[in-house]
Image 1: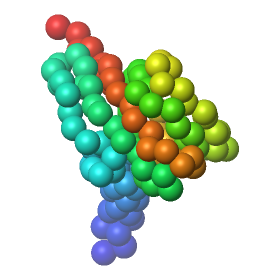
Image 2: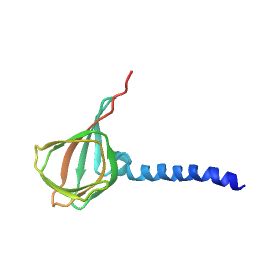
Image 3: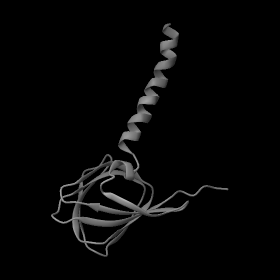
Length: 127
């Protein structure tokens, strides 16, 4: 019986780690369905989404592959990358940014709704 417990414990710990990673790094559409309004385009290379974050709204932990952001309106957000201190960003309509793959959370700390177009660049698979 002791041998079974010793053999199963590492598997149990691995399962817990995998589940906790999914909680903190989920798809943004699932993490914040109210903010991620719609998928504009999705194919094997990209996913383009319309995002609206109302004042005071927080988008919980989620993960993006490499992605770009285009701002449709001015706003102020606080971004917290996993393992780092929060950073405040003043967004201006027309701003465009490239962001490498990241797990983060976001909060609208301004008094206007933040409107963004987020384009995720899907990893390519070798044929």
